[in-house]
Image 1 (spheres, rainbow, N blue to C red):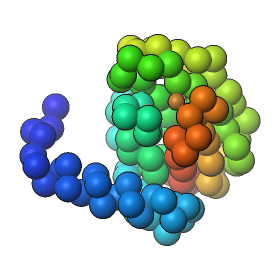
Image 2: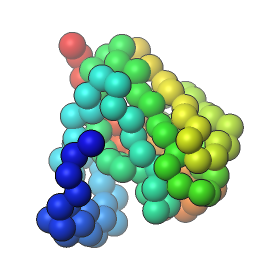
Image 3: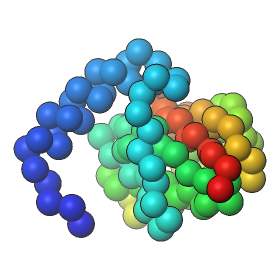
Image 4: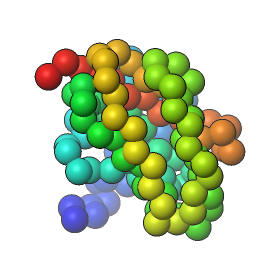
Length: 118
Ligand SMILES: [Cu+2]
C-alpha cells in the first residue's frame, strides 16, 4: 500500500473538480498496472480515468458499504450485476480505443478506460 499523504487528498479534490468538465480525453489517465484494481469508494471510481493495454484485464473492486455496478456506455459491451463491499467485476478489452462506463445506480459515478495497443 502507498502511504496516504495529505497531498493525495488535495490532489484528489482538484481532480474531482476537473472531472466535472466531462473528463473525456482531456484529463490525465492513470496507467493501471497488471493486478491493480479500480476502487469504488465515495460514490466514485478511483482512479476514474485509466490506461491499459489490449488484453489487460481490468478489475473493479467495491471498497465501501454501498452496492455498485459497472456498465459500459460506449467502446465496449459489458454490464455487471450490483455487487457489495469486497466484490469485484472484471473485463478484458480486446481492441484499442476508448471505453466509457458508469455505475447505473449513482448518477455522476462514471469513468474512462483508454485501451492502447501493446
Ligand atoms: Cu455506484
